[in-house]
Amino acid sequence: MSVALLFPGQGTQHAAMLPWLDGDDAARPVLARVAAALGADWCARMADTAWSQSNAVAQVLLTGASVAAWRALSPGLPRVVAVAGYSVGELASCVAAGMLEADDAVALAERRAAAMDACAGDIDGGLLALSDVGADDVAAVTARWGLEVAIRTGERRCIVGGARAALAEAAAVLGARGVIARPLCVRVPSHTSALRAAVPVLAQALAGVSWRPPRVAWVAGITGAVVRDAAQARRVLAEQVATTVRWDACMDTVAERRPGAVLEVGPGTTLTRLWRERFPDIPARSCDEFASAQEVLAWVAEAAGG
Image (tube, rainbow, N blue to C red; front, side, top):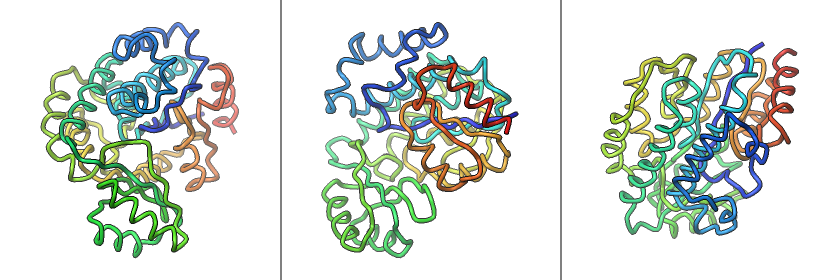
């Protein structure tokens, strides 16, 4: 039996996420670290979208919740053949790969968010998810409005980033052509050149914590390739905030490891849906779909054993 682990990115957090974590002994220290960063009332404040969708909150929350879920599940998982993280989810994936300690990952999420916010400054930017879109339409809107492809998620899917006004105009034009355009709950154009000044700041933060070589295949977001050296992992993690994420290539590389099942470890089901679309023959679910860690592990055992 084997499993691959995918760690979600910003925008998947929600007030009802992963309720079974609260009573888990392994998850408790990580959740305490999140509370120390965000306040003990962070769960009650999730309804305040201005607060919960800010970089400073969302990146810490996603990292902490995903690491806590992994801590709760890891003792009962079968052999892990690959891990990959989507955007800020890469920090949690580094913990699962054995490269980072949980506290360091949460601290780096804080530093990452601060660096991105400082870099973005007064830019009123964001990201726009496009579905049922052809390459010609993507090229046309990026050229016309100065947008950039931030994340490649499939053959006819991608996420573009740039100024919010430009994204709104592009969404209107593409919508008239039958493209599904959905603004994401983020406020900076992540993974575009607008964040270039954040790269050296993040590189310094990454160099300031202890790293170990990965124990399993760790797939880098901006290359879609397996990285087995901690120094190289630090380089791609720093570059990632200002470089297109090739999530489609990441999924392909994970699939090449022939996992029996794929588990999304963290809030939401975004990565599960993308995986099912690309690899329908390899079962995938999110741990956020279950009511307990035991239910998650039972599904993994059945799916991976099949």
